[in-house]
Image (cartoon, rainbow, N blue to C red; front, top):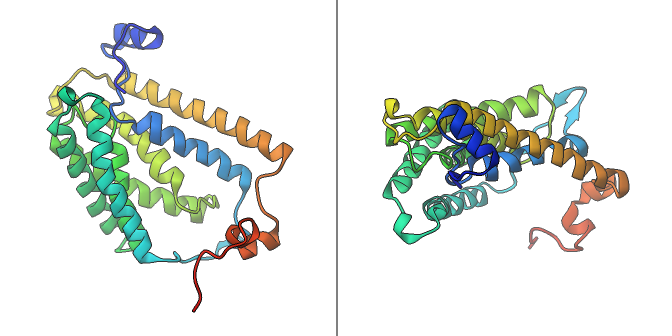
Length: 262
């Protein structure tokens, strides 16, 4: 995903700022765009019934902490294959990508553990935040830069998730926008910072190009998200009725329970 050809905007960025937009494994084009698309959907959908009462947040506890941990661990393992093989060919595979992915994961985990005050939800999303952020520059950064990138991402996730739920009253159930949208944006920018030779990176990146490319991705995602989900909302509606929501989509739509009761 590191576009270095002589095509359109990339050629202009390279000529004007010394390098085109770099996103090796998709911090922006995969994660940030998905997160900002999700934000448009969540804003149009609105909060769940009973989530806010008299302007105050009503806590909905996670349904299964072991499954939360298991899902996080499965993603962590798979992420190494995703990031490393973003090289697309075996001769281009770099061990630096794997090392930087590991370092960013560690940074995200430690930061989320500390800032999130041992909350298991934050703890198991912290490594994912670090991995989202390292995607863009995993082939360029020094491992210490990757560690810092991941740590900032882990803290960003905790702060933004908390603000989203409590201050801004945005009911993003799984924290998709803070985790993928915000940390993906940070990853695009961090690539332009820690990819510089001055900070131990391999160079060949421009902070200005990273800022412009990241902003363009966010803009396309937001406009597209509001257009698509707004159209669906106008034509068929986006959400279940209050009664269906109370019983849950599993029973209301699929006619099967999500859990077994002995």
